[in-house]
Image (cartoon, rainbow, N blue to C red):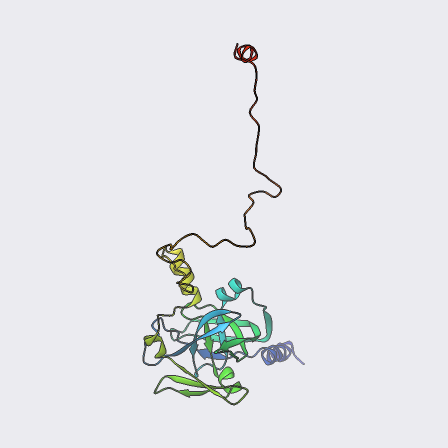
Length: 234
């Protein structure tokens, strides 16, 4: 057997273990585009904006989001070649398995492969759609998820127009770095505009110690005779 034939066999074995697969993902910055279906989910307690992409065989997550949330990462065992419409590509070989993607109290696990993109937090592909028997209505821009108890959950893209604008977690980080102000509106009634009076007397007194074990300093005044004061001032 010649060296040339031997090198060909070795190359074939490597390609068999790590097949190159090509996928095209077009992430849009404007969620109002007519050909984009998106939804807001919860991932490890954090709201994420997901793009529903039936044209993608796998599901992906932004690499920056993975590092921020300290999610567990595993090797895929194979390499996927992901390309965009401009012809550029990136090799993907890491995955976050069994991620708890939750909506309305129901969990739909997903394996998310790490990909460098910023427009969306998550891209849900055919692997997730098939696993959970998701019905995709491209015309009306909504998906139906089947829960374990048989109930159907409808996720509509146009719900974003009737509700407050929802931006992705990473986009929020960008706005804060640029100097945008963030406001907490989860508890709007905690601090009323007018104080109606003092707080009621509580059974348990509450105080904050600046340093543990400290107490107010109290020193009695030193009384001396006039002659002694003259000696001290002299």
